[in-house]
Amino acid sequence: MTLVTHFTRYKKQIVLCSALLLPAIAPAEMLDNIIAIVEEDVILENELEKEVSLIEQRIAASKSPLPPLNILRAQVLERMIMDKLQRQLAEKAGINISEEMLTSSATDIARRNNMSLDDFRIELDRQGISYASFLDNMKNEIILNELRGREIGGRIKVTDREVAHYLETQGKVGGEMVQYHLGHILIAVSEGASSTTIQKAQTQAEELVKKLRAGQDFAQTAIAESNDGNALKGGDLGWRTMRDMPTLFVNEVGNLKQGDISEPLRSPSGFHIIKMLEVKGLDSAHTTQKTKVRHILIKTNELIDDNEASKRLHELKERITNGDDFATLARSHSDDKGSAIKGGSLDWVESGALVKPFEEAMNHLKINEISEPVQTQFGWHLIQVLDRENLDNSDEFKKNQVREAIRKRKIEEETELWMRKLRDEAFVDIFQNRL
Image (cartoon, rainbow, N blue to C red; front, side):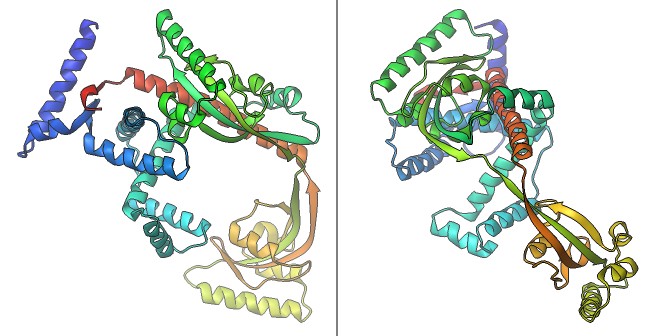
């Protein structure tokens, strides 16, 4: 250990002890409960116990075998350390989430589950999850995603040439796009590690491959040995197409059959072991619906409230029903001046191009049918569908999917390297005798 390292460790412990001695309550008792120092913060033993208990419940619910308790505690502690380091970085960057944003996010989740927020809280309680705990976990996740977006997202670029190259080399799979369900174990190697350390990690990975091929449980091995963020999920990476997986895996995955275990694959982060859990085909054909639509917009203001706007549109609809021309009324009454000069026409629009309330109302209309007044953030609309058709946009859809998948893959690779560097450069002191 260098003199600088000694000094850094000594300095950190002075800062920690100073913070602990400030309260009037017994600092010695608090020190006894510390299991790890993470920069100027700590992780307490009861915090670790609580998190371990939650992970044990999840593993038991998935019917996977539990690893030895000491190994599970070490894995959970490592995840807590990484969360703590990222939260500290986020705090320094001024990233925070307001209560209003949290409530809005929770409401969105409830709505996606076809529940009101109150019903969602009741359902969480039924599952033994407190609403406060749910919000805290969600807040943590949002903050960490925002941090990673700032640290990594801006550096990720996907060029048209990369998309074209992928489609030329990987994208032609006949009429199908194959999906792979992968398991993953990472034996991490620190940046700038010595050749001896690298060789030790490689030997460990090779030994694990032998044991796994001999029948050792993959999920339990991942929980016990992997340094990847998915370790506590048994190393499960979920279903992915070739375009969704790290570049390192692409050539290897094509050679694996269901149940096969790869040789260790070297990357800057360490040695990777992948298992082919399942394979399935996915029809790559994709169609999109296009709708030819027009509308009349009445905006609300100091003189026109919601009731008045809706009333005016009802009157316009009645006039159209009695024979007045929609386009003529749109030109003289619509507040959307861009479409008004075209008789209210928005021309052909693809699915997802319009705001949700407008699109939902539009999709329920038959050809030539006129809606009741529909409210969006822009005001109140009278909508008429003139035509509708389905188009095969498989090629464009595939390009967009490939572009997004390449971006996702790059983000995963960069995130892995960034988190490993964050961990390597941080001051972390674990009290091994309490683990």
